[in-house]
Length: 260
Length: 265
Image (cartoon, rainbow over all chains, first blue to last red; front, top):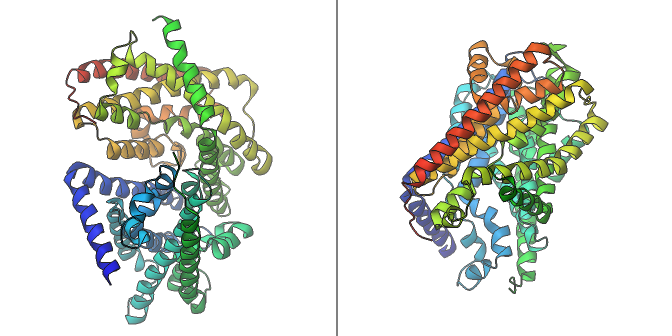
């Protein structure tokens, strides 16, 4: 309980710090909006020439994209500090967290990233606009499924990123984790346009497809997808978080500072 | 300009890249990744249509890889470091040496981009050629391609330098502006999607902007789409942008540096 309060206080504190640089704060939100606009404009230009990609219409692909943006937005809101871990390990700054009488993981996580607001706004707007044309009817079950899908998607991504960034305890190469993180961008598009090995990769190795492809397929029925495949995101999220936590603890126990 | 004063800038850039090899190997995997994602998307699109925007599948695959290689030049970002120097006041060190700042940075940029280019573009294109059927440029296009790539570097340097000088006005904070610039350039240069597929109005806008000179022109030369007078016109456009942006960068730097206040580091 105390940890949660501390985490929220730290996140709020960092938000206050960031908002002191007002221009950067709003530019950060704007940059995220622009990034999504560019990706969506690219998709839109392609869909202007072809009716479907792998059986997914423009609206259905947009729903998929929106679910992923919302999940990633939550991760960027709640855990952007993870991305600083490689640098903190390299420069020994992690020591600063370890001497505090609180869980270091929840001291590391709260870094307010204004871009997360851009992710969430884009995701919400795109989802609302594209749901109708994609054939989604809003009633209690679909709304609940949608919320569950976004939360589980965020948990899956959070688990994967924790695991990936914890690698920096062993491999002292800042940039490595950022490179591996790029695998997540594969989840922005329908998985069935990829060759088999990529599909296996993003379903069973880095299960990022559970943050977008499977729930979107269940919702839109862009391709036949049974409900259990969408609900599988729940145990997968648990596994991903477990793996992330395990690697974090293992890495932290090996951490010795920089010695320089 | 006394070239011997600037030559060290170029060699320092080369050394710097080699000292940070690991970082560029990762950049390379990022580039290959991006090219692959685009490849898969277009691959799915070409299952629906034989020709898109007047390009067949084989041309598009080559386009994706070459554009991705050129994007490396347009992604060049020295404004972040520039902003940091202004914030901390380290820029003073560059102002007291007998070098013209914009020339100094230009040579650093050329050395930097050529070395990174060698390290990442060759493997990227090798993957494309061996695994995805990317074709080689016509031999006759190679000299024009080399010139065009060099001009792209100067143009992107000019844009980066202009953006960097803005840090004199914002007190050394540039992150958002720099992000916005990167995205605008990536899109309107044709790095994500060929200008031929833009709607007419957007294509017209993109063609009068300098960014297309970074990706669209060299890629078109590589594909052998520009010949004769069209080729000369394209290179002429690049030369005008290169000279214009370089002079603008020089003027703007001189003007801005007089406004400098260093908040302290």
